[in-house]
Structure formats: structure tokens, C-alpha cells
Length: 154
Image (tube, rainbow, N blue to C red):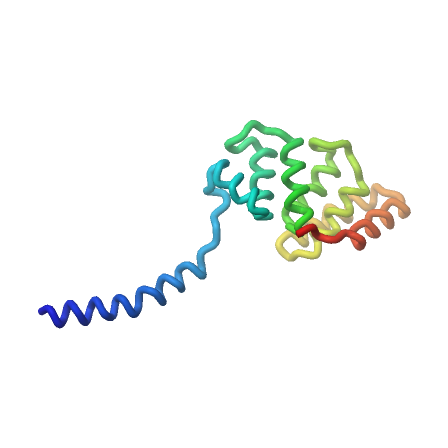
């Protein structure tokens, strides 16, 4: 009996590290499940996804009082690192004037940047096209130029 236990334990010790590594390599942080305190800790470490999620929480008032100014600030921090979702949401906020004065040039710039990522490409292109129809060709060119000149802050 004891040799059987030893064999089973030995196999478990051989398999467990590989299994644990497999599990951990497939895990991603579920940002939606994090508390505000946990999100803030990640934002302080420069986590763009956490910054985006904190911005979203402020925009919709999830776990914090709704505050469009703070949402805009967190979206900017995340978007400045190249987070396409944050860039898309910034484009929306500038286009609608939510938490900030309407600014079609800034809106188009952020939407153009967001459109380079497949996760939001279709949405960003659709809104950007609609927005561009309301702008002068000069303003569209200026927004495109700002997008081309933009560099992520890491």
C-alpha cells in the first residue's frame, strides 16, 4: 500500500508543476471582477487595461460615483499607452461632449488611432466616418495628421 501511495504522490509531484504552469499561463485578469481598490493598485503600476476599466467605472458609476471628468482622465492615461478601447471611448466622449467640450478633431484623432486595433476597428471606423462627414476637409486632415504624429507613452 505504501509503495502505491509513493507512486501516486510521485506522479502528482511530476504532473502538478506542469499543470499549474498550464493553468497560470492561460489565466488573464478579470478586470470587471476587481474591486476599485484592486483596480487602483494596478493603475498605479501602469496597467493600461486597469486604467481603462477604472475610467469605464467612473463613466457608468459602477462602484464609484459617476464622474465623466475622472472617466476622461483615466481613459487618457490608458489611451496614451496605446489601449484601443480607451482610445475609442475617448473618441466617443470628444464627439459627444461628454465630460469635455465637443472637439471633432480630437474625436477623430482618437477614433483613427483606435481603428488600428481589430477589437474596436469596426466601431471606430463607423463613428469616424460619420464624424468626418460633419467636418471640413481641413479639420479631417488635421485630425489625421495628429493621429499619425501621436506616439504612445510607456
